Length: 260
Image (tube, rainbow, N blue to C red; front, side, top):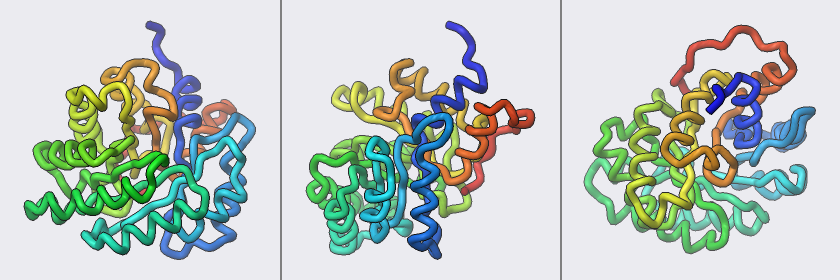
């Protein structure tokens, strides 16, 4: 198999990018600008990802082929089922196609898997027919054992994607966490041909994205490097993608794992 070039990587990253704006001070102007960036000179991103209150605007402003994702129970990952239900209801009513929900990771660490399952179950029920990405917040779970528990719980409650992080904690996506999550997907007979993986937080450069693409293709097959099975959640990656595709990018930097 031919070695993938930076341009090849940039093209995959663009097609699989969830272009994200989840700042506390986001305004309608910010969301409009985000949606305008979703379709550029080199193609379209997979989705834009926003707060629930902006999902309707994002659907209005985004190209039809670009999905709209919005977050629920974000970023704290509480066990408040009703709050999560309200978030998801807003997202569904807005016409968005994807929900990124935070698993109550603190409850999981405390041994309360039932509370975690309750939040995920109400989310899955409320967004039936939409793509459900479950954010494990792996940087807070820390150990491979806890990450595996969270991943298995998410799959049991109907996740379509396992996502690493909110991007709001000191440690976001890491290759170590990705390996655990992908191993859980491939070891589950009902998930290995269907469930996708999303890396989020700290992926600012095409060089940062490359090892995650490698991990996904090695675990799930070359055909998985598409929006149906792989996403990258980022706010600043698009600029480097476009620089690489334009031939103006500087030498690749070492991958970083800090939050965006």
